[in-house]
Length: 510
Image (cartoon, rainbow, N blue to C red; front, side):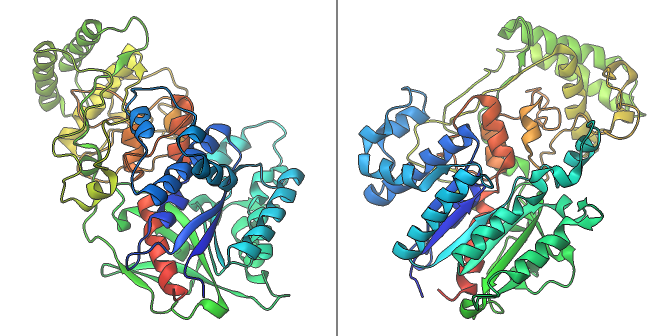
């Protein structure tokens, strides 16, 4: 049995799943290292490559490189990493491949990489998940609205077969496949996609004598275990049960090669009994104001939100008018007292890196000089009214208001506003609960991801979204801000992945 298992990470995105596996330590050693990671989107691939470099550099030198700390803090432009450590950069470039899986050129490169991995690096673990848009309920609803959309011709439905092709050639000791819950109900030509997937997984290796046991992850009495599934829904993993400050529910299938699965029935890890909240994750980050989408400056913003609060204090709203009116009247005065908050901030929180919180111990990195990618977006003035109403309503009512609970004066010109289809078009993340699922839609407008603090009146920053996804603060997302949001939303939470890795370690008896 290998002492170190090499990870092959398909459809890797910015590397959340791989980060979790590579970060696991067992008795002072790391049982997993990333050998190959594959992503087709250019900005995500840049992020993936940089993180591979940082991981390799830290393994060699025991610390982050000084130019990275300066780049992370915004003090310098991105350096040429090959001049910082040429050998570490070479490893990163060889590891992180920019390929579109399922295409002929990518298949040839992957076949060559797999042969090299099996010959040189020993046993492996395969991780990853095909793009989920075709499986997600929202994605399918949008696809149905497209003229001439034919589900069976949508290649995204069958990208899992590329994962299975690699699985069959690689024959790893274990695999982890992740996807959205919508995969369980998605159909093509009246056949369940999940049913086809399970048939394919069950047949892998049958010609070569390597069959895989398929396991689901179950949480009971503070313990997570691997168990044989009884029904498809058993494969749904709830991230909030693993100390992730987010209600993210995903299908996760663990496959164990029979010749190494001797610890499958006894593998277990302790998981947090208490849910981690939005405040636990982002509450100590510097407070920011939003921007105005046109003619923004601090005084203009201060006047805009104060006027919004005054207007809202005069509105009747869903039977809660007196409490809301009092809150808005109080806020109108608070906005005009003191100086407006900044739109971006880099200062480290008080006692950064010294928290007793398990989540903050994972997120905060004491080497850092600054918080990165914590900058607010600009919003239309009319949306600021809605953000302000929603955040105050949530504070008083302990839930985010539905469309029917907004004053009629705040109704946007949306066709579906009164239909009930998108009743939570403007949604506040509750301070005292885990967030809702962070998705790539956060890149669009932020309406589903309103900050709970009414004094800030804004959507979440990239860093806040990254913290809800449990990316450590030293993790940088490259590309423009829209691309950064997409990368964060598409990722697997690294803290969840680390716990999956701990279960796999025990199951394959390392």
